[in-house]
Image (cartoon, rainbow, N blue to C red; front, side, top):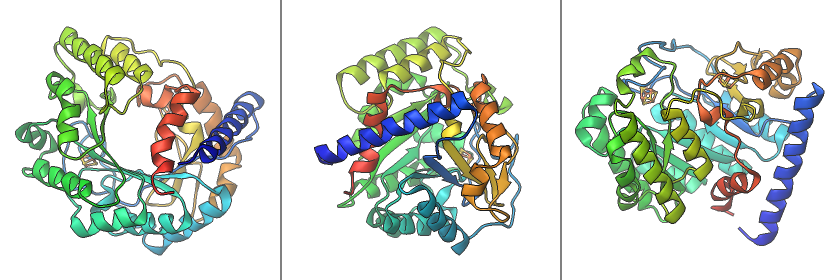
Length: 353
Ligand code: SF4
Ligand code: SF4
């Protein structure tokens, strides 16, 4: 990405920040969402113990948006927003064809796409299609560097090998997205956190994205690290590694906030929940700003632009601005500085231009 493109991006981000601040303090909506999430699939085939999509709160199968519905919605959203970031809110995005088709169409429309996968439903042909479509970031979730630990937590044998094989296949593609390993810090893996970046790089990934364990699901209780001093030492060392070398995706500020969380600090680390910048479209057409609040509309009855400017959306935004929950812990509330925000956007927007 050239200097002029970076300056243009920085200007757009600055203008966006001004508009979203105006929304927050005026009570009227001045900004548009910059992140859209599509729930193209509700199935995934696995049974991870930290997951709130099966077991504790299974999401019912619904007949809903499919195939061309998503493509139409994508095209309408592009016309409304211009450039935006498209993510998948799906259980496993590649459980069916829809996400692939959406990524391909997004590539044609110039929409930036990124997704997280469990890696078990990808094969060489699908990965090649994703790479050719211009997917910007592909994150593979791993619970551990050890196959037996990962498979036990995922509830299905062989998932580690499949995910690793998909990661290596993606890494070998001539033109590929930024490749991440995404991992949640738990009792299963805290002892290996420091070794994980080198392991990920040796398997073709570019970096590891570390996330804290959400406090919501009862099923997670067995995953909370028992040795607090031990996990804090690992996180301190990880922060050092982040400052010295490559392989860690998170900013030092974010890692510091995650460390505080594992040290017992349950307060949101400041900033407004980022959900006021996002819209989620669920499989049944429901539209949400916050995944834990009621829908603000349904795309089968109204367009996204209309829903965004509705009284229901304004009320959801007001509740989000006031929310002090830590449902997604720091990922929701953590507000990176301007430079950090720019740094995290550059790999997404700079790869295929
Ligand atoms: S792969 Fe994802 S959606 Fe499926 S059980 Fe695991 S965490 Fe949940
Ligand atoms: S922090 Fe609050 S507003 Fe944000 S996603 Fe969680 S419940 Fe919703």
